[in-house]
Length: 95
Image (cartoon, rainbow, N blue to C red; front, side):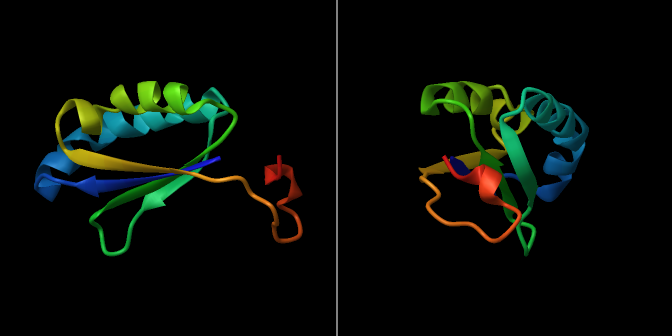
């Protein structure tokens, strides 16, 4: 499983201009079954994505196709972890 942290490196107006394309990209990742959650950071300085069921290389390839990255609007930090415990109802996240 991976936690991806996006940090905006451009003005929010530029981010907003690319948001529709970014959401379409997110939709494809959900449809492919690799993203399980995503959303804005608070305060609005970027976003967070939870991903699973793919290799680091595949994740990096997918992130490279994000319109935010392609337009130079965000930087990405990827943290891989192996869940060893979950709250009730989230057991499906365990390996």
